[in-house]
Image (cartoon, rainbow, N blue to C red; front, top):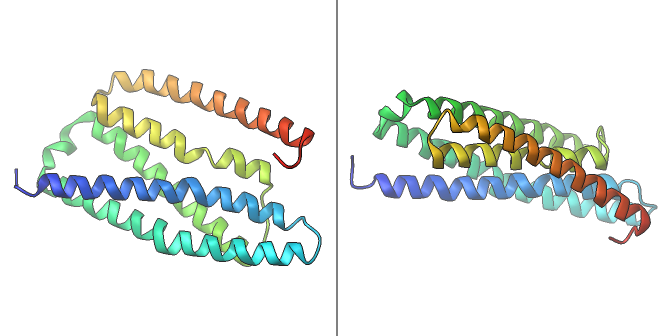
Length: 183
């Protein structure tokens, strides 16, 4: 393996982290934007303008470049070590990466809609949607660390349990917000 494999792997990991940072934060901005649209004027216009700008900067300056660089470095790693493609855990990981790219593209669609002031989703839906990247992250990390297609079954069970816990947390947070709107 080449001397610079570790550097490429490090850069891949850095851009995985920054990509996920964007994917974790952008739905939160979507929630804030949706909730701002329900406020009275002039608060609605001021907040909406601010959230559009914040989202645009996050999306185009951090999230998209990180996604592209993450994928480029991943392809480079596979070119340097094509034996990864013969390992069953990598096939499953790449399937989850495909889901992550689909999640990213759907976020882009939602981003474009909100930039045009088209609100098609509720804040509660976006709170659930916000957990999509978390579930994919858990799956990919366990696959990469365990490198086992058998253990990934236990990981899927764990992901389902995580999903249930996240849903319970979202419902609890909703109840808290209903009692205390400032929470």
